[in-house]
Length: 117
Image (cartoon, rainbow, N blue to C red; front, side):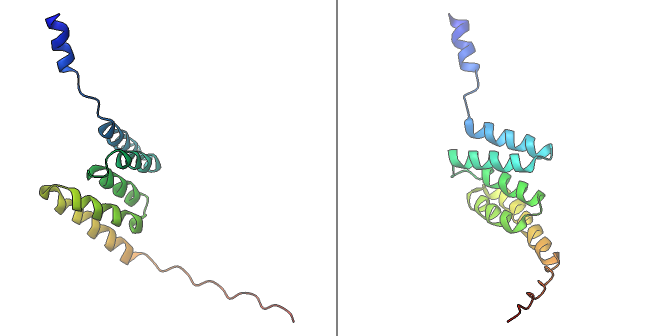
């Protein structure tokens, strides 16, 4: 009986938020950035008060060259993150801003064809 109780005490507590973050990190490492974004969304839905989901989502968006979408995620993560992590998040924001500044402007659209009257 004592062994059973000890075993139960050693079992990790279920952490659905952490599970989604872990899934997202694995997906990102494997280059499946869309899946990483989806996992981050699920984690945020479970606990919008933690920074990891926003950071994961921003990183996956950044990897897809979607810095305009990543920056708001990073900013939210920075508001929730511990002090020791905020500078790293701010570096990601700066990198995204640099990428946006370097991006070529889209070519102008050709004029619409004239219609015969």
